[in-house]
Length: 456
Image (tube, rainbow, N blue to C red; front, side, top):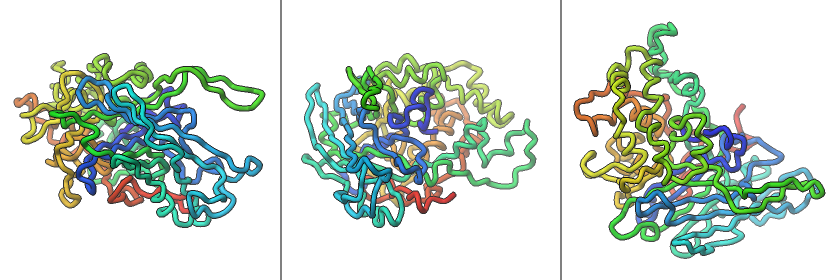
């Protein structure tokens, strides 16, 4: 339900395919915000000998809008460079990799990071090391320490990390894309005669034991916001140069020309489930400021019409709302403008009237202590959770399913009563469904699964 393989063309280009974006006030550094953009979806840990890596020919960016116009005011740019030490071996490493400078590591990747602010480009760091992929106990014997050494501290209170991480997003993809056959609610598929409900069914975490590549940056809040505007909009993009030619003489691609955006991601679910198939690639190529072109797919989501059909008799109130043709102002606020003051007591993350898909974070709201967090974010009474930014443990699948099913509609239509099942929609997963432990500090996503230890 997040954006893994969300559009036809980008699904063919995994190194440029953004899977998740996270933005949250850092729990261990209260004056800073952490931004994470994940790429290269659904990595099998044992995928050697050519293990996963960022694209040297891709421009990766994390954008911040701090004045609500849907355009980037600050962009952090990441470009990668791969070096092959010995082209005459097929091996990724020729012995144990015990440090980032190990000569046993044959295919080394580094990166440069820069910031574009007010049209001016400024380099923040160059030649920064990525860690290798987690191959196994012989090749990467102390992976946790190896990856920790790849956390780079730059000037101005900025930390960065780029490399492989355990996939922390939990989702039952098999159930959701089998016509919304959510395992805890299989009994509600009455037309298929699946029999009496025997109790809650556990979901199957389709992304468990898989890895991603993360770009993470921690920045002081003061460097991202402007006076009087504590809420920022965040999204990530990947861009490729317009011309790509195959050089037959040297056996390699040659790229030239200006960069063109091929991937975009702000809120989870939007392009993957709300935007229709024929417009997904167009959506990926445009900035958030153009999202008025797609607003009708947010305010009249196809999934809201499908739920009553998939679960006959279970969502009568939702069915009536869909039949009324009234646009869903609640979903427009959650996903396209931010939530104005007055709808939820003590909360707003409104950025303005411009319709733009951005992950909105009110930076004036402190991080919720771990023992008081709700994985359901705002729906669970936790003001620091999704859709106020997004933490790595937030259950965005359940939150968005419940919102689309009508749980949030009473915020703008007091006469609407959500169906009883709407507040219980889930794919049956929680953070405990992720085998790799989340970290309590930057970069927060867990140690990637190793190819050797990966279960079959």
